[in-house]
Length: 400
Image (cartoon, rainbow, N blue to C red):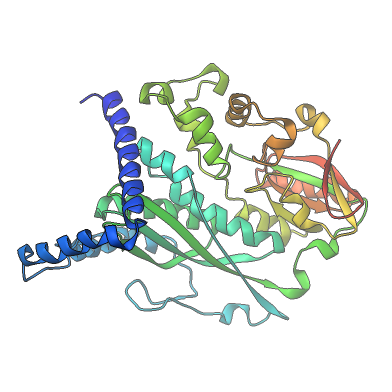
């Protein structure tokens, strides 16, 4: 079978599976009288079932699960920190807080997130190496805006049919993300769900815990009128807006079309651009803070775009003015975002409320400190730019 035929068959099978699920729902929603024959049929057929049913007969392979754990041990080990107590295999994961005893008021900061519809595209293309990095990025980049250092990470992998090497590939990506973020992957869960998920389907959830000393916490209360807004460049779509991405540029395309280089994407394919990993800003930003950068607040630009995330760094007495009319001279929008925006025929307001539009993280600082902050960011390899300012208002993002 050719790659194209396999790809098309995958889509057809997915549609058939959805139709079957819909039919099942419709059947179970019939009046009680019509449902009775189904119950009787199940009762009558029960005599043909074997007396001895193993967990494997039910669709859960415990031995393969054990092989999967063995396959990820080295990847997990690479992420370890001195504070980690023990290794994989315990009921709970332990982490010593002794190293933070000199903090005046240590505050634990937690975060959880997933990868969302980007996983559906990874599954469609059978490319799973980097979705784990996306998972870590979505979590750790949510705790750094208060100035927190991510300490440890846990994952949850729900999968239709567990295959050790497949799961190892996914978890290896998670470990790579943890290594980049400086946090330890201390545990997780692999849950095989036969009958609930299709064999090739899986979903990911991540959980992170970090720490910050309360006197050094960042937040809206520090932001003042006249502060400038500094943007950090995104690597692409990151992990948001993928339901629209799938609808606008993935569906109804063949595998050849999705993997062919496009001039509109700078020679990159839709597949490569769509699956480009989310940037992990955490480690570099923590070094910038430790170097004394006088940053007042940060905003991780995720679902809801700039419009619905930058306002989270504001008090109710300030607005964030974003220089949208000058965007082309101040920062670049990744080609894949522009490509999707055109394909979906989005207005500017819709685009800035859906995608990151080239800004993965925003920092707010005093205008007279902007030069220092930009220099420290550049030293860490960040592409940074001034994208707006804070003015009196009511806690909104406005565009000029």
